[in-house]
Image (cartoon, rainbow, N blue to C red; front, side, top):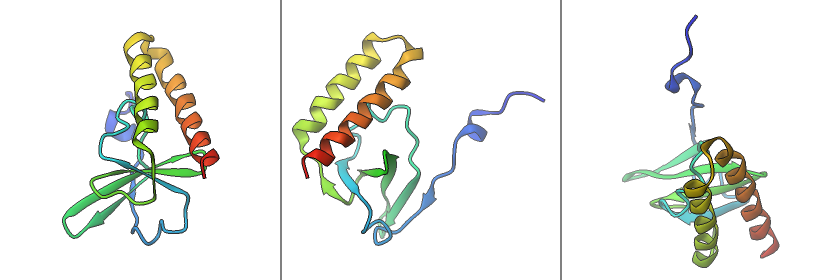
Length: 119
């Protein structure tokens, strides 16, 4: 048997309504605002609007980061996003590829911890 293709290795994300996510711990981030930090993460779900795709949900440490054209949840301060994106960009630019995923995962967990502390 040969190696699985990239498509077979990816998990399928499922459709949820924004109403379904209403009682979850969700943090709202604009479209592509965390592109470096979420580089190796796969969204676990998505929501639609009357215009089509609205947002994706990434599960991290029991919380959800919602990013897209029309995300829901508690808005994340833009300065905090910039701080973590700058750190993630440095990791991607300066660190060997083999170590990037672990370092970005650790950084993402730190972001969630900081968001929870600021409640």
